[in-house]
Amino acid sequence: MSEDMKYGEKILKEFDVESDLEVWENKQTRDYVIKITLPEFCCLCPRSGYPDFATIYLEYIPNKLVVELKAIKLYINSFMNRNISHEDSINEIYSVLEKKLEPKFMKIVGDFNPRGNVHTVIEISSDLVVRKPAEEKEFTPKSRERSFSDKPRERRSTSDRGSRGSRDDKFKKDDKPRRSSNKEGFRKISYADDKKPKVVKKDK
Image (spheres, rainbow, N blue to C red):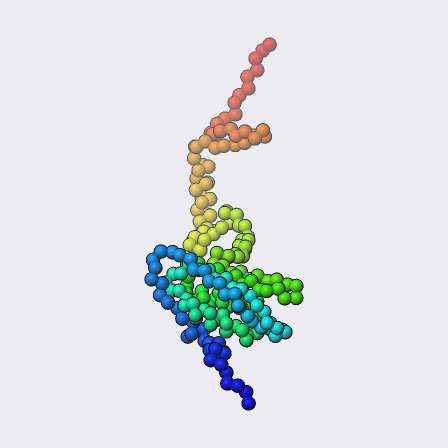
C-alpha cells in the first residue's frame, strides 16, 4: 500500500500557474529594481530523465504589479518533476512573468550546474532584441516610379495629331522666320521671301 502524498508534493503537483501565481499591487511610484535568487531549481532531462540543477537569477523593474515571493518559490519548485530542457524552462519562466507582471524591465539568468562536462547558462532580457535585417528593396529609378494617385497620360487621337499638323502648316505659310541648319551644325535664320544674295565681282 503506497503512502499518501505529502502536502508539499500535492501543492507542487497541482500548482496552476494561472490561478496560483499570486501577484501584488506595486504601491511605489518611483522606479526600483527587484532581485531574486532561486538556487534550488531542478527539472528532468526530457531525453534521459536525469535531474538538472540550476540557480536562477531574476531581476526586474516593476510596473503596477510585483510577484509574491512564496508564489514564485512554489512555481519554480513545480518544475522538479517535469521533463523539460534548459532552454524551454527559462523561456517559459520569462514568458509567464512577463505576461503576469508586465514589468518595465526584466532579466532572467539560468545558470545550470555542469553535467557531462557541459556548463549551460541561459539568459533572457527585455533589452536583448535581435532584429532581422530589413529586406533589400529593388531599386527603381525615380523617373519610372508612379503612384496610384497619378492619372495616366491621355493619348492623342489621330484627329488631334491632324489638327496639330494643320497648325504647323499654317505657321510655315506665315512670313515668320524659320530656322535651317547647315552642314557645320549652326542654325541660320532665313525668311521665306528672301532672295539669294547677288555676287558682285570686282575688277582687278
